[in-house]
Image 1 (tube, rainbow, N blue to C red):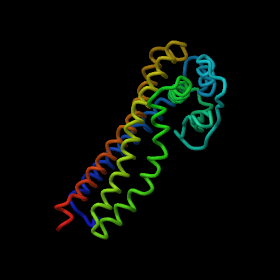
Image 2 (cartoon, rainbow, N blue to C red; image 1 turned 135 degrees about the vertical axis):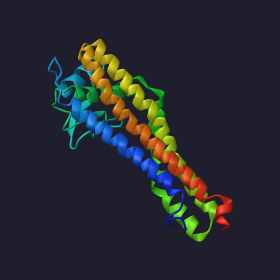
Image 3 (cartoon, one colour; image 1 turned 180 degrees about the vertical axis):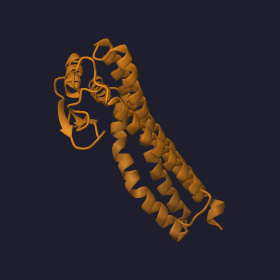
Image 4 (tube, helix red, strand yellow; image 1 turned 45 degrees about the horizontal axis):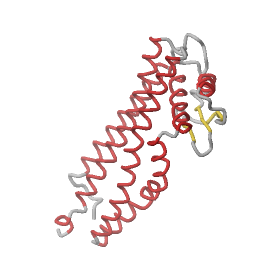
Length: 230
């Protein structure tokens, strides 16, 4: 049985704290720079359209999606979705976020390898996310450590997916910052502000990976042979 309190819960609490701080920081940073309008007055939607056209990408639709900071690019659908707080905003923060998502569209168009790997790993990660915990719980309840370890391996697929995600996200932000500067969409002082927003967003992925690794470490501890014999 593994749901009673033991020292390994410290790992879970540390991971949760790190994720909470990262989430708080990105929301605080976005809110701060969403109050600063760009000097050129270009909206995030217009910015995205301009970046895509300049990259020779004409088959990607730009759509509005509900929520705040729910922005994403769908390679399968060729759709770039901007959240309600970003879509029609002319703020530096919104433009930075839109440019980042355009970075993903450009990755897709140019065949960026890490993005391909992430797309290929999605089904495996989904299976691992759905099955890992039920298999682990069943194995520990029945005292079948080998079964529990299969669940740990499945959970490892989630860790691998998050690890692959990091270079994809950092590269998209680098592309965004370079394009915003080269096309003079943002001035130098504005670029610095947009960079802070994108770095804060990137740290949420780092925090998620850190938390998941701690979870994996806890599971490895729980499924040790010597612990199972107690």
